Length: 527
Image 1 (cartoon, rainbow, N blue to C red):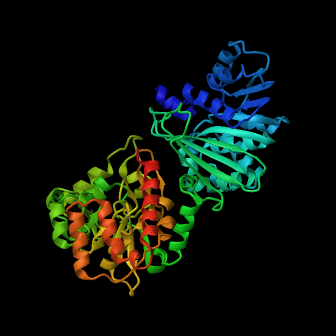
Image 2 (cartoon, rainbow, N blue to C red; image 1 turned 60 degrees about the horizontal axis):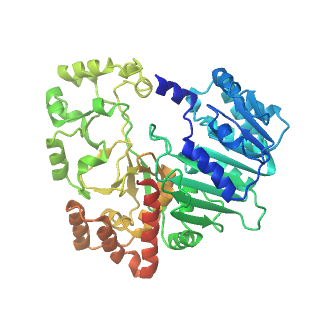
């Protein structure tokens, strides 16, 4: 129950080691601050750490929850500390004060769990800065913008923020906004997890103005929460604004090279029509095993469909024989295709099955036939079928992206993008050429990753990938297929593909640099 309350209130307290690290970091950056504001005080650990600093003349600590406010007021802080019982979004609108340092850990509350009043204030703050209200997907976004409005011109914001801030699409406009407002941005990440009890990855974001001619983004990686020295640093100056701040792990020279090689080749959107696969609304109910198909006597109403990539077991070219073997292992790969089928043609066992699954309730006690996807279909079990492709690309992956040749007229669920190639391209050659150093590095560069390190490419990110296509002979395609089946090391696979593609046009040292970039980008998400 406590964890659920913490999630809804966004109240996970910053580790004491991180609070001390932040104070010491400010000292290392030669930041002197007389006036400090903390927007969401919690149990007061930032106040405890900062109140004894000699330079501080005023520390304003804002807290919404009454019980926490009472405890804070009982702490008998020095007279410089002022505890304010208020919602920070309201406080930021009312105050005329400007602060030299705004520090803390804004709450993490999804818009679905925000109160209507908070949503309204958050959207008003977006409007104030002429930003679209659509970026207000979490309360921390509003806290960042409200902090900007309370900051002195040469002041500093130093926040604990979710790692998603650095890369998610909805926060792209706020990142651009901050690059326009601050010439100095530091992103500090840690190998040690800040909040091991939750899935959310976190980082520190430091925003200030040094009033130098060349704005920059520093990216620093530390081993421990209390490490003094980063084990990796990089700096971006030329390639600002940076679409995803996680990519600041690369250097300007790296990004220049990536852009240079990218210009040479056509992009996915130029060589094919690509779209997500089928959305069933309940894969485990609508996608059947071979045994279920026989029991329900529905052989004529099924489509072979891949619902997850791990059942393919390293296969590069998917033939009818391979699909049959996958089905014989008991995997769910047979999608019920009943949208335009007369119910009179259903077997009794199929009718009973549909009645039974339609009544199944989820955790929220909503029956399958009444859930959003199903209730908007007629009939509710009629899954809309979208076109399959010559190739399919699985949009999420851990270490290596997967692209497969569709020789078996397979369909996929929305775990994959189905690629329908223009007539000028050979599908086996296209899949072969995908596994080169440039394209795989771009997957890491354009994609976003989740806790646990899984990377995902959205449709627009996937369509930006450059593929150095050329016609590949059958022997080389067969060799690559064997390498995947034999589970060869990915570096050997990439080297083989490079030798038939980009190595014919680029110096070897440049290709090695691409490989270094890919490994660097992977390292930031894989622990």
